[in-house]
Image 1 (cartoon, helix red, strand yellow):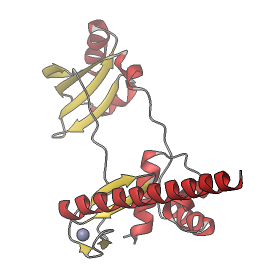
Image 2 (spheres, protein in one colour):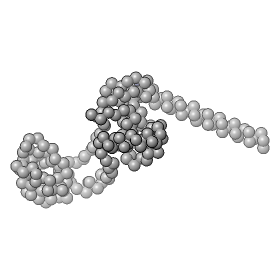
Image 3 (cartoon, helix red, strand yellow):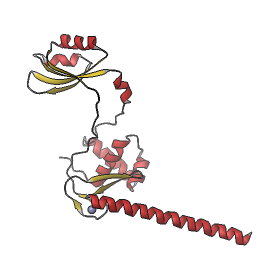
Length: 206
Ligand SMILES: [Zn+2]
């Protein structure tokens, strides 16, 4: 079992959103040095935690096809590999499967069914597919970024200004957000004061 820590996980969350983040960008967002990021990345890749950096295709491109779910029986499951149209295979038993087929039309569907030698038990058109974002299922001791307590179970993942925070409970989440907002207000009013002071200076000199 690969051991990961909070930094690894925050990096994974950032990369899940944007796999093209550079080492410098990651370092900045995580508040660590670039060599640290580079070393961590290399380790995550070597350990097989990060297996690749993929692209996300516009769903419109997939909608050019009709996706149909079929429950089928087949004696030659290996045949399914021959069909590009079969985009998903879920096995119930050695002969019974739930598969998804992407085809242009009914004729295409018929070709797949006949070609693969399926006995069709049920056919259902899929009107909409929604992929739930995967969360890494890794048990590590997270610390709440608000109260500092160790988080039991799944953390609340909060992305704010390009950074990732882990919160232990809705209360901490709310307080964390409030604290951030206040911080920003203070910062803004300080900036305003500096600006005012400058302007004042100009007036007196001019
Ligand atoms: Zn907390």
